[in-house]
Length: 284
Image 1 (tube, helix red, strand yellow):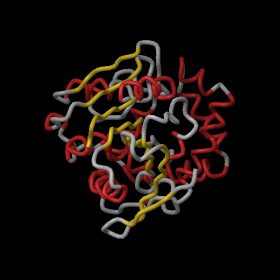
Image 2 (cartoon, rainbow, N blue to C red):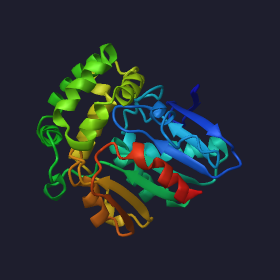
Image 3 (tube, rainbow, N blue to C red):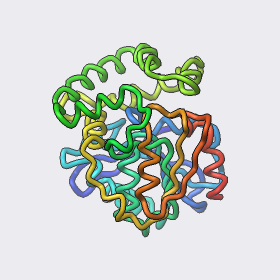
């Protein structure tokens, strides 16, 4: 699907795709890390004709320009501008994994533009109570709090690997997974779909100090969004076997006043690939 773009008030380009019927209820999808808007297009249930589907490239990912002033801090302005451009008055918001901070920032700042909010397997604050059975990602967050420069260097090397050989990157990542997540990555078709999107997500990264993947880790490690101040109802979905985020989604569910809990005992971090049709069914 061909991407479109708009120029935001600060001169940055924001890339996105649209599909479906503009007269239908709008749903805006926010991708995980380090993917792009393309992650949604081949997903089961995505091509539901009951919706007007909008998928964005987060700042610095895909074809969207990097935001030197803070991608999370300004995401609500970006989305407000995009909705005005598309003449959409209100959307339901669905996001996954690294989209977590962006989602809750929007729920805090522009609740009037959001018909509903759905966080699936999303990262949240890196605090002691939210670690749980998190895998080696907990060391990344810990390092990001103390030596963010090391995270930037490491992710610069990872970016080069993804652009050169995304399959190798996926195989290396399997080593820290287990259970349902490992089983899904062990499926060639699923692994190949990720291998096609990862390079699109990071194709514009050329500098180690402007890598959105690093920014995602560093922001989560130094979280500054007051969850208790979010008045919007927020639906939070996560699986018991999701060791990529530990208890971060559960923590947000406990600290956002109007959070609605959706807990899946036998599911992992790739939960969105199984439940997207169910979420969309609730919105129709």
